[in-house]
Length: 220
Image (cartoon, rainbow, N blue to C red; front, side, top):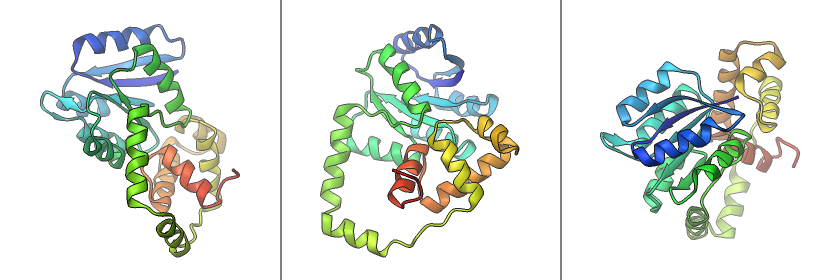
């Protein structure tokens, strides 16, 4: 079961999402929060796989919840569901640790589908947001700059155990499943995940997989 925590203050949208998750055979909603404070408390009360969070909360920004979730559980999957589609919110969310970004024009059933994609290692992004990111990338990085950057980038080396954990992350295994497969504790797996993220200079599973493939650490 995919264990989900929802941070959403729009009651109508929240109820629609809760119902869509309830009828999904492979998901369970562990906790629902409507404020930034409640969201932060929820992170400490349950073990979760996916965090679905709005940005515009009554008492602050959902980005604070994203940052806290990423620090608490680097291997969890975080997706934004919001009405904010501007570049500032998008980039801040990604930098904080979000691996997905959906606008609220997405139907609840579509979001449930994207939760599965996120959990499997994907990065669901609304088309409008994806276009913004690509435009920003093109503006900031010319082909010459990218080539020079790649040439100057030091070669990353992962230990045999880190390589093994990364392989399982790529295949969509959870931290608990990886712990069982390699016969270590979940805490040890999370330590390996943090080391991998630090070495690859990334903040999410999707980024780790992409960077590892770029560096030739995974088969393409």
